[in-house]
Length: 218
Image 1 (tube, rainbow, N blue to C red):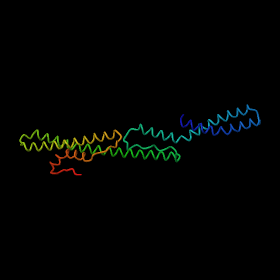
Image 2: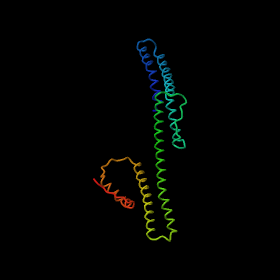
Image 3: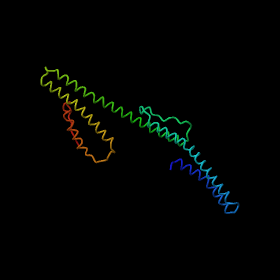
Image 4: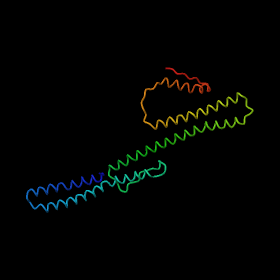
């Protein structure tokens, strides 16, 4: 049963039950014949049902308007930042006003999350483009640089490998982030020393090329 039907039924019962009690009281007291009382009750039932229906419709109109506004947002095309709840046609009750405000806050939070995501992917694309572009230029240079000696060629190849390694790390981080977003985080005990040693093995060569020394203590 819909909320409108339930509300209409409650209003109708509240209007009908006092008349039913009054009619039964008069009938039991012998104040008049039963037939007029029954006809009166039928009339009261019809009037109560009609009153309940129209009152329920009037009371639920602001909520239905909010429902239509949310349905409009679900099918509206365009950027998330441009989404706004349509203004109500008439001032809604306080409860509906608060509900609209909460939906507006939720929409603003979603917009901030989308802006942060777009900024992150933009920065990631820029960071990924830089090493790939450097690698492409290095390869183009090596194709034409027949005069280079072995040492210079090895130096360029090492630099090229470093750029590609940076791009590989960015892709790995993106895949890890995608996996984390796709599932609910699970708590687990973590061995920080083992993690630090793994990172040491991963970055020791890069640190050595830059003249840095890495150690794990503790």
